[in-house]
Amino acid sequence: MELYLQFGYGMMAHCKHLIKNWQSGTVILSPRDQDIDQMNGFVPDIHKVGGQVVFDPQFYVPHADHGRLTSHSFWPSDYSTALFNSVDVRRMLAVLRDEYNSPYETPFFILPGSRSSEINDNWYNYHTLIINEAQNLNVHENIYFTLCLSQEAMNSEEAIHDVLEYMDTWNVQGCYVVPEPSNNRYLVDNPNWLVNLMDLTAGLKLQGKQVVVGYANHQMLNLALTKTDAIASGNWLNVRSFNANKFNNPEDSVSRRSTWYYCPQSLSEYQIPFLDIARRLGILSDLRTDTENLSGYADILFSGAQPTTVKYGDRESFRHYLQCLRMQAQNTVKESYIETKESIKLRLEGADRLTKYFNDNGIRGKDRDFSDVVDSNLSALNVFHRLRGMVLSHKWDSI
Image 1 (cartoon, rainbow, N blue to C red):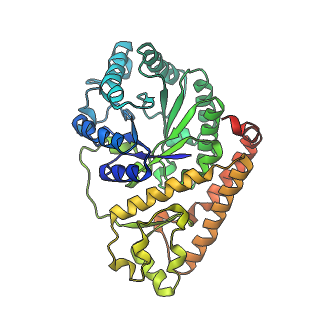
Image 2 (tube, rainbow, N blue to C red):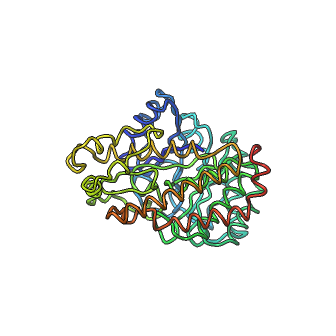
Image 3 (spheres, one colour):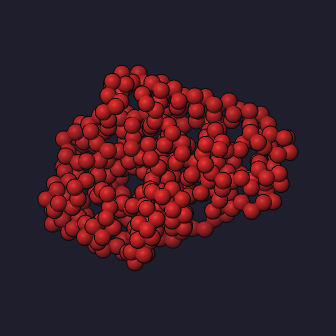
């Protein structure tokens, strides 16, 4: 399972740096955060260092009022669902092809898709129109359907079942899944939501489709058990967890934000003063990232000095997180379904033990502490195994 970089506010330098270090990688472009001129300058830089880009139209909220997003040439000037006919769709898709995909040599074409709460025949007919027009225009040899589901849909077993039935009728090569988290939480504590996401991605893979899950974080590492092809993540929380409100905010609000350190083995993030406490108690080394993650960005925190006194800021924090997440994603899929399941289970159980140990010593991750969601993730893992384990174990090598 690969890690794609989800472009967002302040991601340009991180993308260039990480792709250059990795000598490969994929960036999902964001029209909310870049105008066409900025993209035209940014994309060649990514290509030069061995990377590639895909374009997300971010049509999640058709009535969005974010100035930069709606100023792009593909955005409808006067959107109305009732009047959004084949002519409008064709114009939008042609612009996306000619200005945002073909010039950037994208490996696949992400279709525009809106956030959906109800999955029914109207939903199916609307998206069938988009798919048919895309195929008529020959927009790309690899077409990915955007499946952005509201938290209500994500919590509904029936909705997930209906989505999979409808998806099976469409001749698309892949699916770009954008799930809205339950209760808009960064780390989801609803096991049913987690099971539904795993069931959805597994069902899509069993249909022979490629699957990319956008706006993801380390909780989505479990999707390796569904053979998901890639998850996408970025720097701030609004590119690690989907929230439709960001597409209606014309300005980037600047609030006082803390710097965090990601501890991969505990699947938790900690503010730097808590590392001071760990140093004081003589257990700071237990928080240090394993060398297998190939991240030196946070080494200075463990140099012997008090962590809050060293030069460790947002730049190091974001790059450390994304480097570790990439290594974790790539190393989670094993030779067989059972090996992958056991690997994920061991990771979760290890995180459970470590977070309890850290919490007992006063080291807490606040709303990014994985101890709050370990049980939900273990539950989802067990339920998913009962639902899909036999089929996936049999078809592991072919999906």
